[in-house]
Image (cartoon, rainbow, N blue to C red; front, top):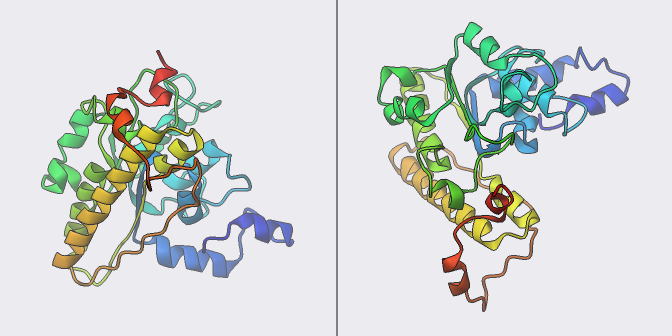
Length: 269
């Protein structure tokens, strides 16, 4: 299911009409899929589960697939939470699109509750309120910069009123999914990605790298506690390739304590 339609297209299949076995696999897995992450929903790992395009950098098209406006199966996810700029039409800043496609409008037409700020997310009350019933999407940014990912955790923690943490989204999503499936035979598939760890590695930013790794560890701790209370739940965790050369062995972290922002945040000053 992780292979995309490009391989089928290059072997003579019609990209717009993928082979039935591929769609069957997608239907089986995506029927109960939810996804969220700490950068942008058009990032590669989620592309494998909720979108099929020819180019991993076709972010605008990936966003369309994820919400279902151009996916062969239509909408295939119930919860999306992450960065939002590829879901907004070009004249609605901050947008990363070069067309007038309004994916938020499409989502609302399909019955999704659309959440675009911290206050609206907090109204979900960690999925204890009626507002957290499926379907919903929570896509965010600080509203000041055109960027397709959310803040590094180090920067976000200093202005939590702007954006939610990965742990916030995971706790809310798991509660929503548990409520939605408690009295059914169907389970759910939740894809979580601490993707800004990779970005910090590429940027050689040790502070951002460290704090996003700690956030991932906090998320895994929360999910493990969740599993202890929901024994029919399986957790699979995998690491990306290492980059940036972050070394903890014999490394003195004390100089990092005086850092006040990530390199990314410095470039915006």
